[in-house]
Amino acid sequence: MEGAELVREAFRDAFGGEPELISRAPGRVNLIGEHTDYNEGFVLPVAVDRAVWVALRRREDRRARVYSANFGQWTEFDVDSPRKDPSVPWADYPKGVVSELRSSKLGGFDMAIWGDMPLGAGLSSSAAIEVSVAFGLASLFGMEVNGKEMALLCQRAENRFVGVQCGIMDQFVAVLGKRGHALFLDCRDLVYEHVPISEGVSVVVCNSGVSRELASSAYNERRAQCEEAVRRVREALPEIGALRDVSPEEFEAYKHLLPEPIGRRARHVVYENMRVLSSLELLRRGDLKGFGRLMYESHRSLKEDYEVSGPELDLLVELASSVEGTLGARLTGAGFGGCTVNLVEREAVRTFEEFVGREYEARTGIRLEVYVCEVSDGAKLEEGI
Ligand code: GLA
Image 1 (cartoon, rainbow, N blue to C red):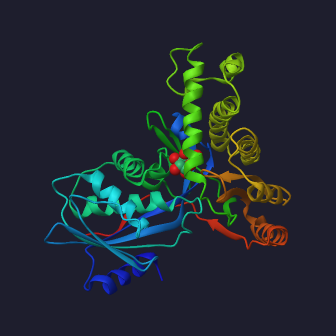
Image 2 (image 1 turned 180 degrees about the vertical axis):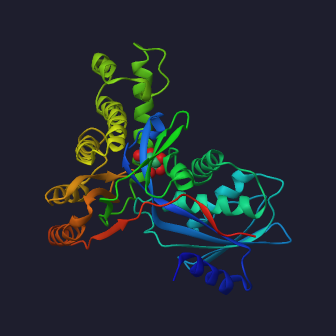
């Protein structure tokens, strides 16, 4: 059954009657440009065909009743004062969005949520929930919110209400991704470009099955280290605003200002930004082999300099690289477990799945989940009013 039908049924079971509208927002996979977004740098993600659907109906009062079909749990709150409740952690995302929407047009609502994405696996189910809820509520109550504002609003929901200091990448591509295209984004001014991806390759995601529990504290620590690097490089280059402003030449000239591990963290960000710009050129020219080589370099840098990989992710990249027809492989998202992204020639996908799945399980005892992704559109209404 389609996601829209499943969420409609969940809505009927939970609240009775029909929803007024259904919205959908996708998960994402980042092809290259990791831990660059909060350094005001460049990223190149795609939206995928795993998504979160939200079914909505207005209420006469100012209550919000929310049902998660994935968790089989309910929650209820006042739209004017959403508060955290540790017994329903998934509800922080819709509550965060409600607290950021802050419009006089917003009223009470009933909402069912259902998604077909692996939760907490690094495909950004959190951004998909936020964007699907924001898009659905804005449409239901007739609020004018453009794509960039929507992405920023959802990022604020995550930063302020949920308490994760994420960058803008995930929310942005969940709103503005485009079928068959990667999204090149300059995270400083939010100028973006859609770049077609050749039909001859598949974006294949491997879920290591390793939990990302450490992720948010280590993530915030990496952010702080980047800020420290900026403060120190400013002694030589007072005009810089973020690591994005440091060229590789400047980094090499001033790296003595950076104690370890700050130096390694900064090196990753400076060169990763360059890799994204080069990948963009290669993608425009259709040079996917060259693109794939940069993915491997990105992984090495995330492993050695940024230190956000782990034995399972490294093993997945190594196994992938030994399959003929794999063009590139790397960890994707924040790291510390989660997924790898692989660019694989279409005719090699089956061999890839068989070989990597078998070897990974043999060596780790973990059953590998592989998703062959369709590159999809960003948020949309499945059904309007
Ligand atoms: C997470 C964050 C993003 C980005 C990536 C790392 O997915 O939500 O903003 O920082 O990690 O590239």
